Amino acid sequence: MPAFTSKSRNPNKLVSAVRRRPFVFFGLPFLSLVVASSYALQTFTSTRYELNDQKVSAVSKEDELGMSKDRKKVDIREEYYNFFDTTSQDDYEPVRVPRPVGMPEWGAAPSSGDAPVKGARAEDRWV
Image (tube, rainbow, N blue to C red; front, side, top):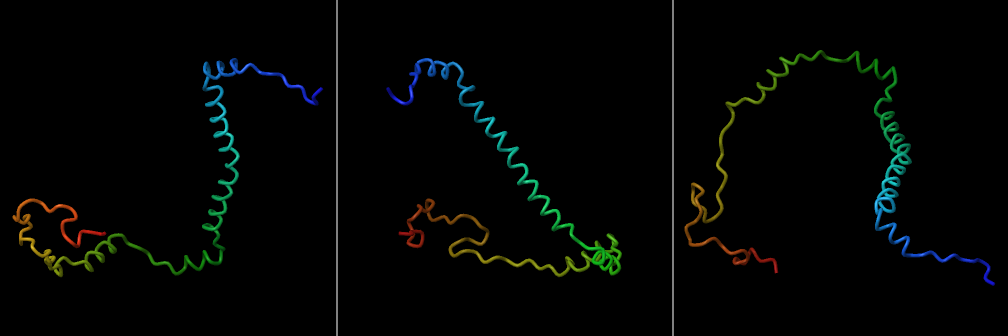
């Protein structure tokens, strides 16, 4: 007599149950695994964000007082006019970009027949 007796399952019952309700056997376990892992990883992600928040906001009172006493008042209008004084439009001079060899001055396509075939020129080939 064997040590473990085994009941034989009727594979037709299992196959027919899966065919009737595939969501119960495949979709529901998958969705429950996704939701459970989300809750399990929640502690790790919250720890990461809390640690980053501590790094950003870790300023002592002495450092904070030292920063506030040397501050300069900022006037947005003054900054606006200073910006436009430094970027004067009077200094601008248009410069033409050199055209490729064989290209007409006004950018029309060269009238030397059809468009070039890819790989026809020696410099286009990579082999």
